Amino acid sequence: MARFLILGAGPIGATTARTVVDDGHDVTVVTRSGSGPDHPRITRVAMDVATGPLRDVATGHDVVVNALNLPYADWAEGWPPLHAAIIDAAAAAGADLVTVGNLYLYPAGTNPMTERSPIDPPTRKGRIRGRMWHEMLAAQSSGRVRVTEVRASDYVGGQVTGHLTAHAGPRLVDPVLQGRVARVIGDPDAVHTWTAIGDIARAVATIALDDRAWGRAWHVPSAPARSIREVAQDVAAAGGALPARVRRLPRLAMRAAGVVQPQLREVLEMTYQFDAPFVADHAETAATFGLTPTPWETTIDDVARAGLGRLGQGTAAKPAVAKPV
Image (tube, rainbow, N blue to C red; front, top):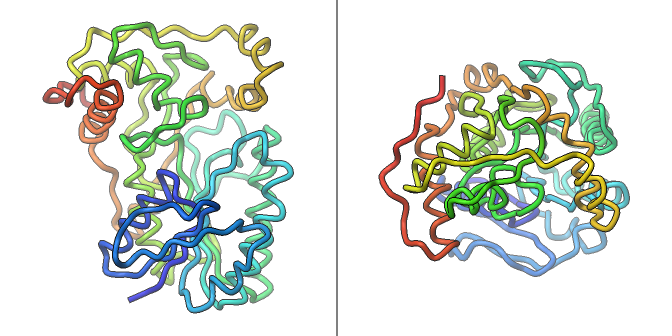
């Protein structure tokens, strides 16, 4: 049995905590509010990770999982002290460090992205994530702590509730299920890799306890790439709704709204991921750990069911989803 310290209880942190306890391990979840899943083997702690006694909380744990997800507008100022505190606490506790990362580090137009693609981020937020990864590698090289990063693409699943930055979340799902036009960011026909929340949790729970994991990154196994239009059509079919109607948000309108909405302004620099194909490869992870993605039909049924519940429309109909090719 291992002891996991999971930082954050958003969709990824909470799902990872449940997955880990289902595997027979103990979990401590740290959030500012003390929230998190309710389970006899989960201890919840209320603390600010950047300023609280994280070293003390980490003592006695075998693995520290960084599943924090700051608002985009807070990345530049928020991540440096948080990340330093996390590395320090893991090192002091003699624990291994697993960070849930993303694909922002890779050059635009790299298809497919692999774990061995160059680190050359085209955006400010990508450069922040790149610095964080280099800090982790430096900590391992100096002998302080073993590290790995489990990288996922944009999240999909019934647990996804974020509105603006969740491209396959309520901003897309709710209007589709209501028969309204869904306004999307980027080219609705550009194929994109989507990663199921449950697959992220399973990857973290598995990789964190394998000695082959350390000193490098791993991509979470994900279903074959689908365009936003295809995702919308799949959700409509699974939810028994009318055929989806999708329209691209004009860039000028987004820029104008970004003047008064900092979060939208931050989203703008990430639109390159949706203006062209954005495809990740997970062959190394699958071959090394035997992990496979959740079937796309299962994920979409979960998305539709959660959306219908959110809208007060009952449960999803039996899925009628076109299989990815």
